[in-house]
Length: 592
Image (cartoon, rainbow, N blue to C red; front, side):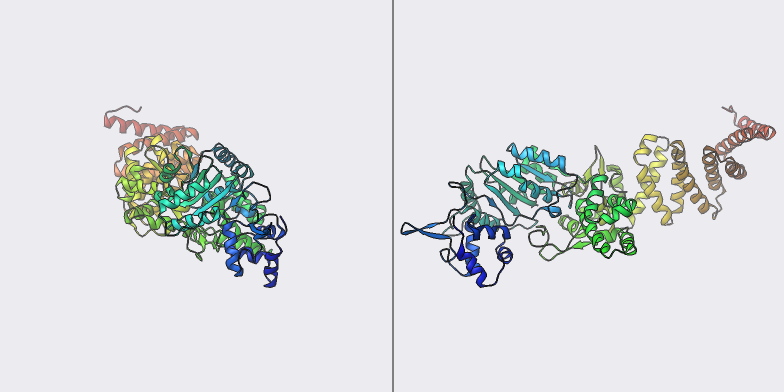
């Protein structure tokens, strides 16, 4: 092919750069250069766009040549008998500025192998987990392009997809002749299927929200594959069956590496703060990218003070949710209107808005539970949310709540932050407190059950303490402290008991004070703090005697006897032993 001097002349006459032309028609500067140098000729879609841009015919722009006294079209590719590979101009650019996806090497290898074996796939997962980034990377992978030589067709759908518009564009890219009248969706699908024929294409439908819309693009031939991305596990299964894959967040080390790509100063100078940030957003790639770019903008001045202030701001979940960036038209997610900044808030809000009112309120109520990796039971979720099990099913189907084994659930950190920011029902916290105190009193000796729910119990007790639910807090502490002591969590047990005792001393409930002092004495004794243990237990003895709390009275006497013996106070140990013997004799039982 000869250089296309006419195209170059028209561009230069207007003082336009190749980049400006490329932007105007939705292509790349590299392609415009190839067309002008005669390395290749534009596909029919771009040819039409160029004619519209310059106001010239295909002949005037050098797309047809005189040969043998007639006219013929320029070849569409440098190789004789080959059709030019189609790379959809609406496909987003490579993520991470082309530096590759952090922590996805093994996954990409598996997905590439699946595609090259001719098996379609559907990627599902949380908002911001990187489904689109994976699809773009796969569509640019040399192994995939070598296997599917015809190229890539891309359609970004979103909650309100314009299916016909995407199909019309695919028709232009494939050179399907314009119809004389308006075609039905079915007719367009058949025409595209015929145009694809035996050619090997990768068809990508990004951000699927409706099965009906997705099925309209299942038009590839036997040598083509489909890649779909969606937030909804049920849609992924319906589209690709066994080819459905759930995409998970990054592990801490990979999350740190991704943050370091954008804000190396943070990781280099305050690794602990950087790792804490990774954990606070649960390793979500979108969150780490947005926060990394924000920190990068704050670090450019070279002032450590400014960077530290930025890190301090990001300790607030509200700030993390609202860090945003504007994206270009090819990078804007289909679920966001053009001009809407991308943030965690905007990415999650789209899913939230699709829920019915009941599911939305349940999601907010569940934010009182500690987030992933903590899990909570279905029983606890329903008690806190005051809703039927079907509301949990709706959240799982929406991709906002994760299953974690039979009857258990997980809420990702960013989803929990979003839901908590929109929680308006103060009773959700009250119901958590009621549930955990009831659980402790029912299963106080079942260490396995308490271990499973320990983080939820801690959250309930913390809510009760901070919100002045003193009676429930004390009840919960008295029931939880023995478990903490048995498990060796002495510092936490001591903290809770001290808090509860400080509350109890303002009341006239001497019996409760005595029980709490007994608990403090037991913990101090386990920690080897004999002096503190003696002080707590002697105070407790006075109170349980007055209250005639015989079970606690016996327990205190046994511990004081043991403590006196440990400290070499033989006579005092004997005194405690005699008092214990009298008490036991009065009850008609043995000392045990």
